[in-house]
Length: 111
Length: 116
Image (cartoon, rainbow over all chains, first blue to last red):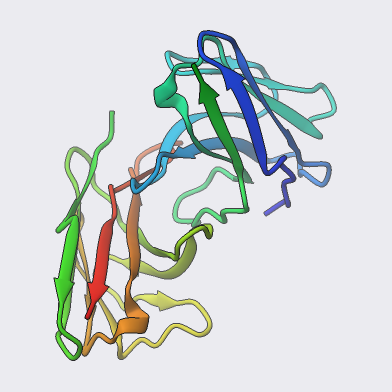
């Protein structure tokens, strides 16, 4: 799986958009970008994933650059409950492979 | 959406006790489940891959005789920490993925194990 690089921490004001970057310059053509988050003392929660097109669901938007070497997770209106560690993971979307977690970005949403 | 249930959520027990943790996929079948361990302020580390109907695959440095894994059905995997000691105290998390189609993995809420 390709390695990812994320800033260790970020702050965001409540109600504002939170933009979390991820670099994955060695990504392969068949690797997807997955985002998970982990709220304190809970298991990771799936947020969104994509291959090359931008994706949006009820939780977030995922913007992937045209060269696919980086992506941004956008939480459009951050709330205090969005405070968590956010993990960007790149891997092939096939059956059975485990996820490899890096350090992630600790997002602190402040009132 | 897919739900993974993990039980118990919190265990406190004496040193030398064996502890069993269950991981269930509630609305999908999972031929493969994963067990992770997370120490304070660290990221998740894969311990083993649980395969339905066959032996689990353990990561380097994880003792298979200490961490017994049983994946007897398509919806249940168990992790038993045998003769637990204080250094086994950690946050144990399982994950599973719907075997059908291109589905993401989903995680249980974790089990916090404290060995006294």
